[in-house]
Image (cartoon, rainbow, N blue to C red; front, side, top):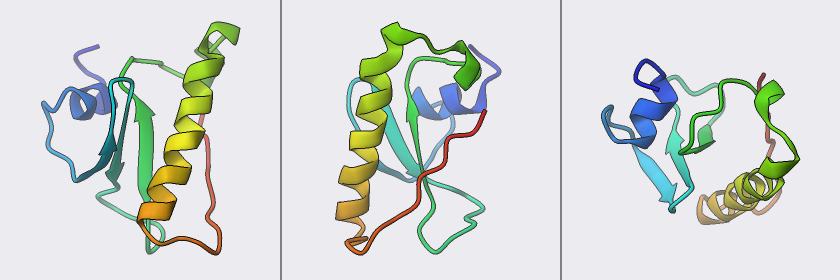
Length: 87
């Protein structure tokens, strides 16, 4: 999707400070952080809204959570962190 900000970041059309990436996900620092550590973890495949996911996306959703843990550990957040899913 060409007008989606997140798709443009995932495809590197828009630069971002990437902290983790694999073939299905990308994690990057928020430009306007609301916390001392504010990192977004997104799928590279366009998903308009959480309401659009189905059971076929269960593995991808699990990978997003696992990536959040990996990023948190790499950022030294060993005492816990908060995750939020927006829709």
